[in-house]
Image 1 (tube, rainbow over the protein chains, first blue to last red):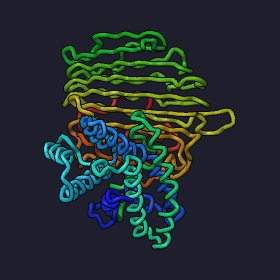
Image 2 (cartoon, rainbow over the protein chains, first blue to last red):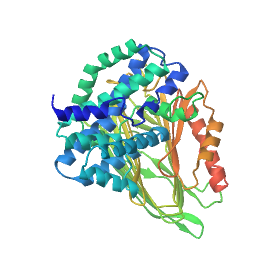
Image 3 (cartoon, chains in turn brown, blue):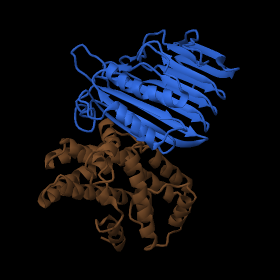
Image 4 (tube, each protein chain N blue to C red):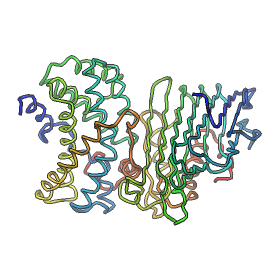
Length: 228
Length: 274
């Protein structure tokens, strides 16, 4: 393992304060309805969330952003920034993601001096950009010369571990059940990352109906410990 | 490529308060019936027909709809869009919509029925100017097969792209592949058979409107599941899971009524659907 990988892992750490721990991306709706109530039902939700939403949005975007950075086509990066925002139809997940993205951008700016990040910041200021964690993360992965596959994988991993920790608190699950879920998802993550390598822009933003509906419905969930 | 199975072009303008077609063109397996005026508002209504009776292997359809300033159109279909078995090549439809300032398009097609081994892709591209209003619904039914199996189609892909003053503001992408997905399960159709989607883009949208809509549609119904949410621009989307077209349409009808009432001070025209 190189220093670069360690540096990227710093961004994946649950102590990295992006505010991701306050978002459930619709999971809380299922918890309130009683559909997700233990490790097995949570794993089912997580699998669908990863394979039917995350890979087509953040996952695919990570690969395409990395590629665009390699080819120095920044316009493509900004186009993906907009696509990520407009494909996110549920307001809470859209706005929550933007908040996490801005927060992450702010943090990494204090750690790294990367020109592309400054441009991103400028675009946000001018309301031309929207702020998405996968854009910030991928810019850093590329800057640190970590490979695209690894960058995408660490990004997905970071998302999953945060969601699992959220589930441990909210369902609740035992800490051991949480760790077992992280272990259980390692091969699933590897597979999802492989799938991302074969997707194209034509696949961008595919979402499964039930998941998205629950993310919309979260706006009206009675008891809320999460913002989305 | 110009080898369209069916083509339809419809340009509507507002002539002294009455919306009329400036240009109507159709060719092949798409046509429109004579225009209908449901009330004295001046809004025109066109029914689209598919004389072939359904979409087949490799069929390609193109629709271009343009509304000039302050023109008002209801666009609907005469019957459900049926997609039959497409053994080699998917059926495809693209719709380009241009809405100038002050125009109103209510695009309310009948449900989409995909039969066994059907593959279908549909793209709606809506280019709006600020001040235009767009109201859209679609309903996907589970199809039908001889052995009674639901979701026997191979693939349904529906994309809606909305551009406001040239900027992409909505990208809605649903792709259902029952063979690879557990349609009945959590995250997919969750035990329901019908999926309804509604999108409204209009300047008068605000959080209070969403509150009223939520109240009108009741979240805790057993017969359906619903989510609605504001878009990144003035507008909102709705997803409904239910077990019949009627149930989905009754929900959409309630929302449609509120929008018509609050924004235009009129009730929706009585398409036979509601």
